[in-house]
Amino acid sequence: MGGYSSEYKISLKSGNVVHKYLDTEKYESYRIHILKDKWAYVDDSGNEYPINRGNFSVALKSETLKFDCVFNSIHGTPGEDGLMQAYFSLLGIPQTSCDYYQAALTFNKRDLLSVLKPYGIKSAASYYLNLGDEINSDEIIKKVGLPCFVKANKAGSSFGISKVYEKDKLIAAIENAYNEDDEIIIEAFLDGTEVSVGVIKYKGETKVLPITEIITENDFFDYEAKYQGKSKEITPARITEVQEKTVTEIAKRAYDILKMTGYSRSEFIFVGEEPYMLEMNSTPGLTEQSILPQQAGVAGISLAQLFESAIEEALKQNP
Image (cartoon, rainbow, N blue to C red; front, side, top):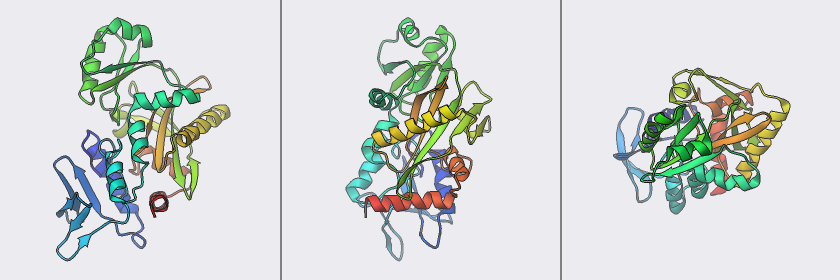
């Protein structure tokens, strides 16, 4: 839990929820903080023991801890972009999220949508910028129109995102996005119902969870809406049977095309009956209030069952 990005506090909450709900009769769980300034095991009294990064072990007074499986609850880098996945792959330690390539791909919104486009998975008209590129506001607006969304390409929890209504606010929005990432995606505004679709491996099967409809009090589903009570999340979503069938099929197809494992949560906006993909998260929030656990609950899957399944799937992949 933790990470190096602006999402580290949310990740710490997710990790603590996993630690709380794991069945103590089946598992001995240890909270490992992966932070810029330290990697450490933090015990229930708050004592810290440094991680040996050479083999991901912990030296205690009486023993050296080595782990059978890692439950990855890091949002953002290095837990959602492939770095930790590659590290654990090299060490031969099973971990609960997808593999390193899938993590890197899904973390990069531009690359993800480009890979899925040939398979008929639609996304909004977009314009790309890298740090140092010339910014031509007229060209951007010609491509995506107004209002538009300016997003950091590799960031989560709506950090570095702005909705822009006027041409003279575009530069400030781009600068805000560059605070989070050196790559930007600018997308056309899609006016429609926003939904979130969880897809998981559960008991060996790819399972699409009940769909969540997102209704925000704010201008869009930003950080405040996600984490400070400024939104309503309705599960199951109030959408038509055609919409439900279409978005369920597309979310599962994207999961299978990418050869995903572990959890994923994809965001879509409906334009009429047609879902347009915004992004896919490979390490979604896991607090009691987070969307994926809500969806699992509606499907009759408890948090303990949800977390246990992830561990069992990881151990099957890397026996």
